Amino acid sequence: MLITLGIIGIVAALTLPSVVTKYREKVIITKLKHTYSLFAQAVDMAQVKYGEIYNWEVPSGNAQAAVDLYFKRITDELELVEDCGNPNVYNFCNNGQRYLSLKGATASVGEISGHQGILKNGVMFAVHVIRNDNSKWWGKYGEISVDINGSKGPNTWGKDVFLFEIRD
Image 1 (cartoon, helix red, strand yellow):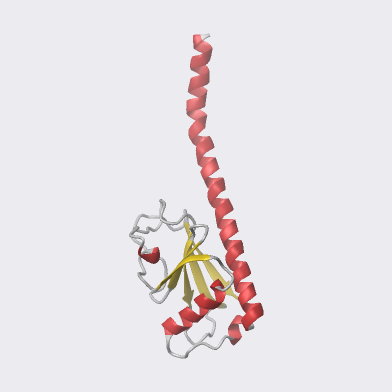
Image 2 (cartoon, helix red, strand yellow):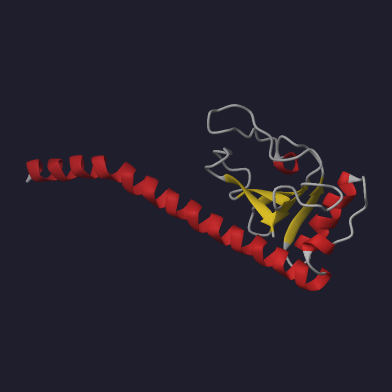
């Protein structure tokens, strides 16, 4: 009986890390899909309310005003906990976390003129405009970078930090 329990213990010890890793991956994928859906709907709703994104009149030559306009229109229908403005390009909403690339180098969370916020579900995000005259660049108008689990680790691009592009 002890030998049987020992074998069961060894098998459990070998398979448990794999099960936990797969569970964490599923949680991240589910949260990422949900976050993408929220922002896709928000951009669609903004275009219903304010017209197609290419017709949004943005202040010419003022990148921050353009970003603020995009942020306001995209977040109209979202439940924000905090509007952080434009605090810091190297972390979301001055949360003090260090963000990394997959190779471990310090990485920014977006363009310098990004406007940041925190959603009710804890997602931290930043809205960026590609061109401050609202012309598209390679088919895109803007970007939304997200940290799907807020300040919790690993705070690494491709693991819990992702980028959505706003395109035609």
